Length: 323
Image (cartoon, rainbow, N blue to C red; front, side, top):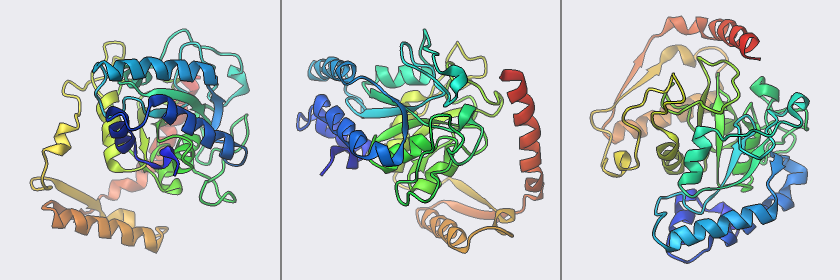
């Protein structure tokens, strides 16, 4: 069984226990990429094997010395190719940036590296994050690992496909109007668009600055929470960063149920156009939350009809300014 089929938290525990080395985890990730990448095309850039293995050895030493004890230490991670990485090609899947090698690293990526995660590559995306299928990349189309005749969604389609295809265990994506959530849905993995300001945007090549957020893509909710706990927090380099109390895994480890939580379900989302299976699954999830003690309330939000036209006015205006 491939180590990449494990969850990130499970692999992290094995690394901490000495059952698996960081080098073994990295080699397994590279093997999966070599085996599947011709078909899936999740990546624009895979880092040089020697460089990744050198980093793996550094991290292993720190783990052995007890300096790195977090849940993601030694875990391979993929980064969407619109986040700057010092010394590594960053293209936004555009030929305009065919030779752009940043001199600094995105804060979210730096936080992952500080936690001991191993960056293995930069993932494919819709060019400059403008799209929802990962078909507009200058470097080729990404395929859905579950059915290569289908799209993986976008714009973080490469990141979501890499996790779904076991080419990485976790990945960083960015979301402006669904670019993490939608591909995660299409690829059957877990994604989160954090509250605006919860994660630093420093080093993220902007699409629409007042909407963009960096967030985790993972195999399950616990992995997404582990990743969010690492990347969230205040950053002086980002004027819109405003999270004085960053999320920690203790927030969920200490929770026995969902008592005191209120879940709102907008009835307006269940109108024309929704797939019946999707509607049933959402309501099924609501019942699970209710059984765990949450208060679940359906409410009307008629303003939702303005969401898409408003999004396009704001996103297109800001993209014109930024790019």
